Image (tube, rainbow, N blue to C red; front, side, top):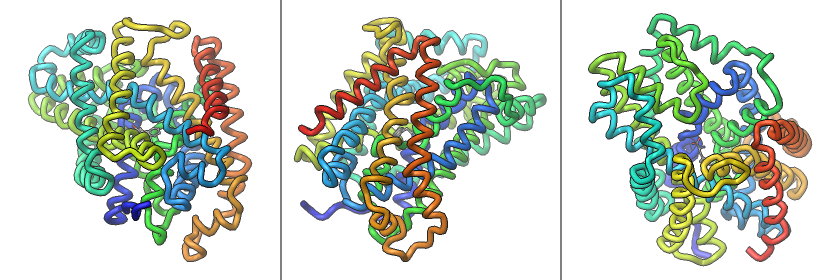
Length: 469
Ligand code: TRP
């Protein structure tokens, strides 16, 4: 095999890994999921999962990837062919997430245009504008394709030139914009009620599906459970400190999610908008807030959607890369051919997802493609992906090998190695099973249960057939 491409610099890696983590998950998904799940208690459980499970699984993924210097499927398969399915599951998750992520990425691009062409001049119509936009059968598809083309352009150029450059410039910009919006929101009268909603836990609203949503959110937001961080870790030089890299990425990602919440909830409460808006939250609430701020509002709203598009792009590029890296490493494709193949499948899935929002196309147990892809990945595949990575690292690799990889042969200090090891080996897998069990059971009341069971069946089938991959 040719010498593996490496990250141009340490900062480049952090920026790309954080760029993968920080995306629609933080800014679009986190606020509406927190809003739908009752606020404070959900946020607290999410933070607990981020620290205990998220960080630990990220470190495990980095270690597994760098050890063999192979992307997801290869890293598992080269150890033991029976483990191929864990990597294959990751490739499948990446495909399915890319079956709806570019749809929302396309909305974000479209909103840059909408903001600058008068969206804010009729604040009362913002909600209906969003609904009629996403249910239109053609326009969102064009934006989705435009969004995917941007991804293709970045990924075709290869790992260090494309992804790294994009991340380096665009991530700091995003952070700055969110801080500016938060300050603006917090100075509005009545803003504190939003902070209370977001940070004051009310445990009476917690049930097993809130807990599963928090776990899914942690995995989704940190880009875990499907081999992204395995793939990224595989490009990381042997002398890099995996522990501090995992810690930095975890903190940055979580900071952006919280910041997005702070940017949105105080202003929402100040303006009397309800938190349980669903997936339209960012697209309805943010323009509404800015519409009431006069001329500067247009500029802020425009910057916001540019930042959102950029954040989405650095994430979806990593999702595309998982599938591309698989096709290159395992199937011998060259990069352009791999990119074209992967994105063709993604366009097809995205068309289904986008049309389903206008109630067009096939349904599964009453749910459209968009919801099905989201449910399968967020609630099932990622959690079980995290489960399998933990089992793999904890039981398949020897403790000394793992310690060697994580500490760079003893030169990196990691005082809580043993704590981490117990987490990875026992506590995290058991917790994931327990949370998933509760969430699936509860899901039978909301109609999501059958789809989650299908997810489990798909995992089983992948396990049986993936030796051929
Ligand atoms: N973490 C990204 C976000 O928050 C989405 C994402 C990118 C992702 N790569 C992933 C989610 C891998 C799960 C797994 O928007």
